[in-house]
Amino acid sequence: MEFTNLDYKRIEDALLNGLKLNKLQKEFIELFETKTIIAGPGTGKTTSLAAKIALMLIDLNRNNKNEGICIITHTNVAVNEINNALQKAGVGKIKHPHFIGTIHEFFNKFCVLPLFKIAFKNNNLHFPDKNQPDHNNIDTYISLLSRKYRWMDEGVKKSIARRIDSSNLIINTEERRIDIENTNNWDKFDKYKDDMLRFKIKRKSQGYITHSDTFLFSEYFLFNKRMVEILRNRFKYVFIDEFQDTNKHGERLLDNLFKTDKNIIQKIGDPFQTIGFGEVMPEIKKDDIFRLNISNRFGSALGNQLNIIIPEAQIETKEEISSFNPILLAYNNPESVGLAYNRIIEKLSKESLTFNSNKKRDSILVLRKDTTKKYFNIEYKEDKKKKKDSIVSELKKLIVKFIHKKIMEVEIDQTIEVRKWILSHRNIPEINSLLVDVLKNGLNDTLTIKIRDEINCLLKERAITEIKRNNKLFKDIEEIVNKTLNTEDQNYIENQISTIHSVKGETHRSVLLLDFEKKPLTKILMNRYLSPDIEEDIDFINRNLLYVAMSRPTHLFIYAINEEELTDEIKTKFIDQYWDIKYVQEFI
Image (cartoon, rainbow, N blue to C red; front, side):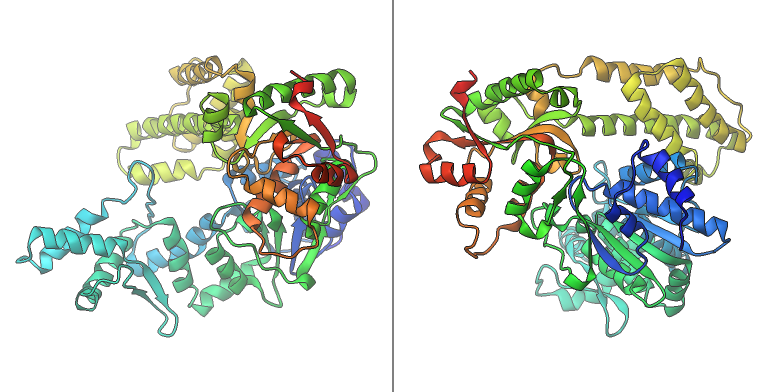
């Protein structure tokens, strides 16, 4: 593929507000071979990926090529982010023959549903949720057992039903079939194995599956060589966003599918942000790596510290971007640290125009939620972004339910099919985007009209009477939004506190990191600065958590340390690496 200067200008004007892509971002965009792209914090990963896809779509349309692009994202938020960027660039959202969605959506659409249609004549999949976590499987298995073993005691049937439910389906690769394992080491497993497998498959065939079943049934489906070739021929280009968070079973299936001479698969993310407990670090061959490592987030004062924590990150910074030296903040009383932090912020806001004009969050980060109760005597509050996401989800459900009811008043039958049609409609993502704006700005006249028009597009397609802007639906939306805004927590420190896990992917103005109790992060920090050359077993999850916390801020990072632990050796080592040493009593 070839992109002209005009192509680049069009994308830069749309996505970068007049700024230019840097040399590494352009190299990534023009890279068309199977690679793992390690994109560090603040390197513009999502923007670069969106720019690459936009330019590819321009080239494909210009040359009338029928080469499919498949983008696997970690969340639906990322789907909206990329689609919105593509719309800004004027190329429109991803549509056929291309695909964008989560790894589960990809395999459900292209493997599980085709398999269920062919093998079970079933077009519907039902996944568990918080209201029905087990699909009432036990009752179903008891019913199936009762048909064959009428003489069996009810208690025995219930016991066997539970064993069926908790026994895992597996792939027998030698015989290329689905099998069941003796997950519970049950001594009577062999006696009932055939029934257990048959009943379990029977229940699954009705569409009642789990998220892990997606990969099991997909692996089975991909034994079909013709289906494999169809997918390989459809999608020449495959991008896996946030690969470090991608389900490993699913990732292996994607590798088996698309690591061929005629396909290009690129995995984009930061393996050093693997922070889920129980996860393993991705294995990456050095020859497979392309580094997108010039950060636009912070200056060398912070970037250099991240390279001490994880030298393999190889983060580079721009000369024109500056940050403050990080601070070791020594305390006697941990409950006073939050107040001292806010005094530091107030002081810097008065002294630094660039810091004061930055509108990002100032955050207090903790490993565990209970830290806030113990040291601040307040309950941990869910992160605002997550609150907003849940409110947007609630509003979307309200609208979907409204549209569904309007249609069912006329059509009566096919209620499940109608709901599926609504949820998969091309206008739903736009409604979702408008709801995000509603939560930011309130339900004004402009947004009301836009939402009404989007809803009416769906209704017109089903020949349903359109709604007006004074419909009760908009009063219901406004009531939910106003209730959310009115209950917004005004406690400043309370609003600042988040867990490290919850802020992954975010950018903040400053960060105070607390590690008050067992101090796993402090151990790693001291090891990296006091004994960097000593090799030992790396606690990579806590190392990565430290890295994630330190890479959130644009300007200032503060690490709270007990004054009793602040030895002369520690002071010397940290000062030599351009840290500042401060004491809580200086500020309160």
